[in-house]
Length: 427
Image (cartoon, rainbow, N blue to C red; front, side, top):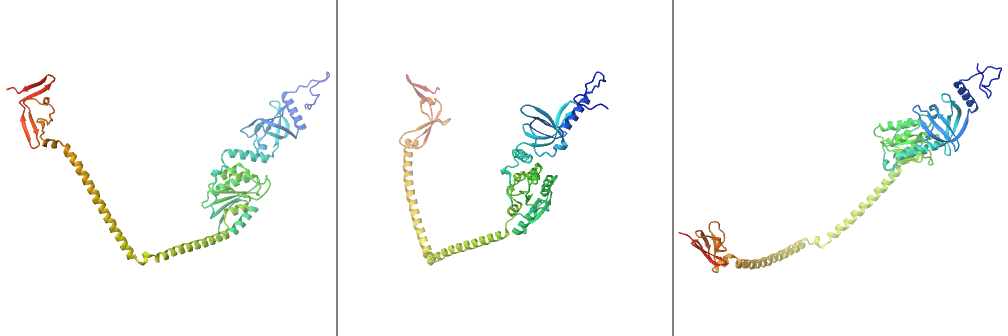
């Protein structure tokens, strides 16, 4: 068997035989030394060169101002990590110093990782809240109103916890007629988030549920953590049924609260928000009934007084006189209308006679009556304005004040700059 690696290993005396190590033997020996001497150490540093392999293993570098060390976080250990790793994040890493033999590179094999400053769960909460907020899962515009009078209320919680007892007590006291459908789930521990998300989806597959209450009683941040899981937030966001989140106490806030349509400070408060108090409803109905009766009485009294006043009026006592006065007024208006129309027609007749006189004065027929005539070329009816408009041999139609003369032109005298030029019909 080969001797163990020691500070003097590999040195040989002149009288001793020489021992030669292989590279693998050296790396294996160094790994054993490192792992035995640094079996469990905490290292503080800043993450850089972070990469997550498809196998689930995480590779990163931890560094400070002067140095750095490679690290690996195997999937079987990092699957329980609550927050996300990224470059620039300062952490405390616990593990052992080892050596990756194929490359002879020493590294930290991480077994546990905690963020500096904030706790791991608080950091995970802030990281997930930031991520989902950017995606719009918390927008107020998408939140739906809670039905005021739900017939069926679905509840997703533990069947044995204090939350379901508180909800049932409040609902039975306030409005016992409301139907309740419970989908029992784990509310903490491994697998709780997946059960809650699946229960919400199952409730959405049942018809007739008007509103969902999702929650549990109080506890530590670790106890409430199932309601901070992304799978629950997305199930609440995707629910077609309005969701009331009721997780923990009034001071507790979860991702489920932010994604829900309404956040209740406690499970009991959720029950009070979702169902009305039957006794208060009866009192309100009685008050409304009283106000309606009073309003009707005032209305009837007001109109009764008006009818009585009308009965005492002059018109109701002597209706025939009122009709006669109206008839007389109608006759008076009729006479006024007739007089107005007669005056209007006389005025229009006078104006028409004046216009007719002017037309007769300007009419060509009136001019003919004073001894003038109009001559037309008989072939086309052209009105002659000068002797040049007709030739000898053509026929004329001459219109006089009384009658028409048809004649044939035997000669024409045209006026030019040199005097009159005569044209005659040649034999």
